[in-house]
Image (tube, rainbow, N blue to C red; front, side, top):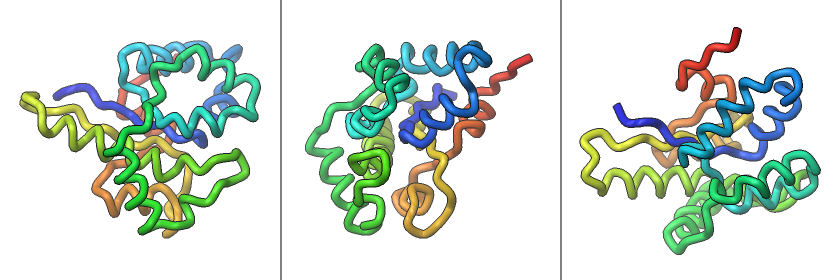
Length: 164
């Protein structure tokens, strides 16, 4: 099976900082950063913009610019469709810009592009979010667009990480 790719929401990066502080859980951060280096942890640029009000994560994100996907016409079109079907996702939240439709769109486009390649088993792009399962949240949009989603601990489980 090919390696999974993850499109991460700002909510999961904020949870990582809050619940897994680097000084206490350095191994968790190393694993996350390994995914970034491998190109397996990605996010739309809009997530980076949502992190601008958090000094620690803004600094961390600036050092990992390659993980943030630039806007393409394809991502924009899918994000517009996500926002049309789930308008609550498109409203700016307490963190700033509304990245949610783009998190789903990046995963959907990654999956579409990878299915067009010569991979025997193309890697799946999975959304990572801490949002609940309400009808106006990322998980509902993921389900509607055929994108799998997990929370941060779910990512740890899929990667079969163990911390002792």
